[in-house]
Amino acid sequence: MDLRQKIADSPMSGYQWLVVSLAVLLNILDGFDVLAIAFTAKSISGELNLQPAHIGTLMSAGFIGMALGSFFLAPFADKFGRRPLLITSTAIASLGMLMTYFCSSLESITFWRVFTGIGVGGILPCTNVIVSEYSNKKWRGLAIAIYAAGFGIGATLGGMSAILLQTAYGWRSVFLTGAILTGITVIAITAFLPESVDYLLSKRPSKALQRLQTIAQKIKKTGEWTLVDISPQQKKGSFFRLFEPSNLVTTVLIWLSFIGVMSSFYFVSSWTPTLLETAGMSKTHSQSVGIAISLGGTIGSLVFGFIVSKYSAKSTLMAFTVLSAIAAIWFVNASILAIAITLAILVGALMNGCITGLYTINPTLYDADYRSTGVGAAIGVGRLGSILSLLSSQVIYYK
Image (tube, rainbow, N blue to C red; front, top):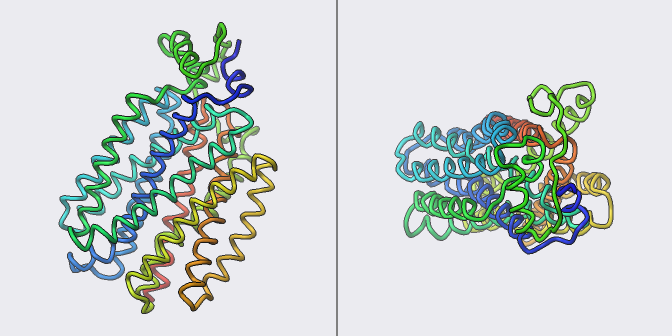
């Protein structure tokens, strides 16, 4: 019997939802990290006497690391397993946040922001794939939506902690908090997160069948499981397989989609508090609007998940994309705080709903033996688009 098919066709067990919960926790770290720097950039700039243009550098450094991690670490998940890469990447992110706490110059902060981003970049492709693989057909869309909602939760916590901690303890306390939480998460995933079933079946590492039996018992799937035959091509799992004739169009289209969606969302999430404060809005109000965007992101992911359980992910994603563009135009022209906050929630909901849609579709596009490579490459390209968005907006703004 094929355990993958059993998972797809059977009800979700408590342990499967635990796997989803661990992935949510890891995605919360991504959101916390991104918004922590967005809300502390002004304080860092003030303490270190940095030029205004350096704010964009601080924001972009993490995205550069995330892109590098997604590109260069994700293929190791296909070679050595999703679980060991997740543990290693999370440990890297924790160390990066901790070292940021001790930084006292733009150069050192930038370096450790890149370092932290590399860890986060290695986390995302694995969590996205594991959630997809451990969810059944009925609830896969909702499970990925709950997972994607973790970003908004983490971003909201990042913004709230920045507001509360900066006043009492300074901006460094935000990163120390992130380092501690990430370190605890390393322990949690080491103790409870299983290896990817598809990885064990497609790569057949040592004691693969025994490990499959153990996983099957934990997720309450009974039966005698077998290892399917694999071809020599499946053993390679190369990055270049993404550009084979059968994959080329798919790869190009998913990359363009990630560039467009992630550039928009991360620009709005990262720059909104700074732009509003510079335009004359109080720090508290500008941060409130930023938090509203993050809160909306959480709501949007969950709404997308419920909708996609009844309609196709592709059609739902297309609807969210069009609506997010319309909402962004309304948001730009809002002049009253209450309306701005309402529209910020709507913009965050629709844009993060688009990211949820891409997370839902992306793992289904590639075979198991190079799935993490494909997912990581798409996310990495999306991060590069985010970097270009932040840098170009910085140049335009300061001119």
